[in-house]
Length: 183
Picture 1 (cartoon, rainbow, N blue to C red):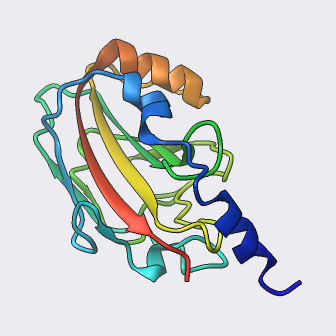
Picture 2: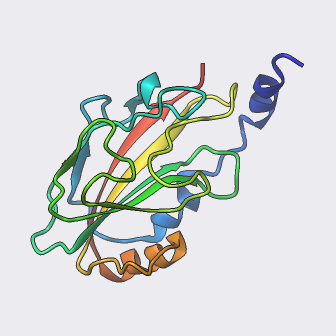
């Protein structure tokens, strides 16, 4: 059965959730935040050390941003795979950041990092790097950063509740896209 995952990936290659099916697509804050990484350019390939467990080292890339509105009460970072063969893009990581956090160093997108609080995704808590199906082709990982005018209450524990808060109090957003294709 060697090569079965690759064969499955090739069969599923045309099946992709798509950016338009993202829960984030309906959110309307202004595009004023500039989000970047020194590891890859927007639309560029992410290094293999950023790939998820069993594929890479699961090291989160460094992230920097500017253009966050004054008086921001919270930041929310969502990383999702828009090419997963599911009805919607898969949220890999969801984090609420203290607005005083102005950047994330390499590997710091993990529980225990000061100023970060994670919501559980299907992949767990913390950073979950790219792990596309072998043979499925290039996947696009969108790092979306939202600025909110209100803090995110600690009793908000689901992504659905968080999306409602972003919809109600989002003031700005920025996006950085990294790509990854499993060798």
